[in-house]
View 1 (tube, chains in turn blue, green):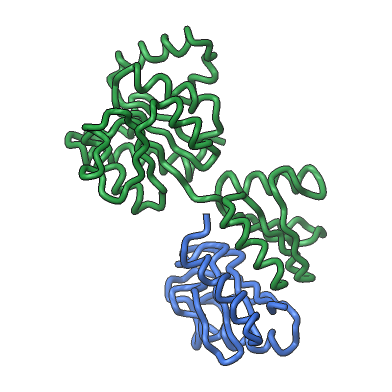
View 2 (cartoon, rainbow over the protein chains, first blue to last red):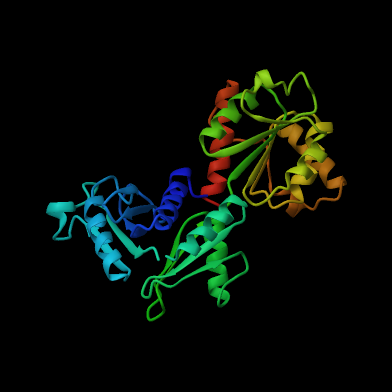
Length: 108
Length: 228
């Protein structure tokens, strides 16, 4: 059962799209080690940068929103990965020491 | 994701029908699969497993397409037979844990709205009540009355359903005689093995609230760590 907040994310994706916004959906597809949000967690991003939901404890959302805005432009889905061993760790790493893989797709 | 796909997922959630969203991570292609659907046996099994354990599954077989299966299950329900003291604690705790709680008890003095604010009460005879609830694999059934004339009819319906948890309050002795009665009613040993009795994890509970904790812990264990 998706909890209420996950349903709200899907409702927002539908409504924003219907209002004519560009919309992208990010989904946690795999986690290793400790990671705050399980596979299936969603973050939905609107073309003005507004977002709802979460894919981590707030550690990587900023970077995912940036990529989501890019995905809206290209119309192509992509897979992102974040971890402390990643070079990006200095900017957007996961303090918990886990790794998370995220699928970002445009809502069409 | 296509806007129509989101629309369909939301409609299935609303209609309380289980569905799995399958995403090809290479191409972004998506399909909605219902129980029994799948391109081959292994995919059918993945769909079934994702729904059963209520968790996402990613296949990353060498060479094969990487597919992500996300289940959208109907809400969890807990049916508590017996509007007794333990039911008061259990209904509150189960609601916090995400269950829609329905209390079944035909005794009006027990199943009084004042004793269970905000909880759905069903005052029909337990077998009729259970039939009308159309139990599915997202249901847990807990009997608390110890009274065979109330517990047994409820259990007979639960045992013919796909409920993921069936548990009964009562001593080991009470439980042994309960199993004998159900056996006489035609249930096999294998069918009766589903019944957890005395219900609850052995954590030394004393008060009604502590017993509710032990029951909810066992229900959670059965849901999240099902026997392989």
